[in-house]
Length: 269
Image (spheres, helix red, strand yellow):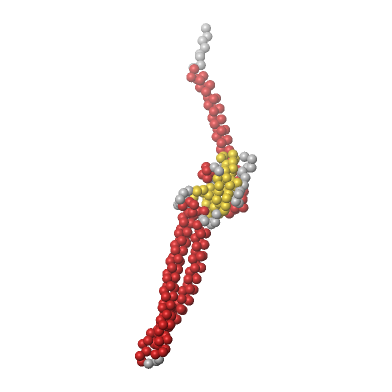
């Protein structure tokens, strides 16, 4: 009677699992290739977009140690110190003028009092000393008058310098960067190429997923004085530009690496 040899159970299991493993590797390879292709496509889209785009704004967190804050603080401190020096110098000149006025007045009073007596006494030897004192008093009075004219001129120059310096201090005191002396504030860096789209009142958008899923998060309030340099949000390049003051309705937007001014990058997304 013929006998049949049964296929070992492990062999059957291996033949059953092997096709599944192959299919799994194929699916994994396709997924990996798809992810690579998707990443490459997104990378190309991002690079092409930033090559042509002129609407991006890079948020910058200003702190007391930021270069612009330190510069503004130093500038106003130096200006205030110069103003204090000018006012102190004026006070000294005013005191000197007062002294000259007293000298002039005292000599004028002495001449008015002694002059007639010396004139009535004649030019004898007895009045030589009195006439010498009278002549010296007249010389001192004239010298005081001349010095008073110089003092008046110096005071006028100092008054003009003080007015100019006060205006400089007041102008420097309005610097937006001084607001960061006591805490952090958020501004936006705009390169010169993007400045035409970053006007006061322009809305700002933040995109959660690269260039899509965007929502309005605030607006630009003003363009700040002074040139600054910052890095491009996507490329390793340092650009020249200016800072803008922003009003953000979402505080988290200030921590995002880039915002967009005017509209969403792809309008409807």
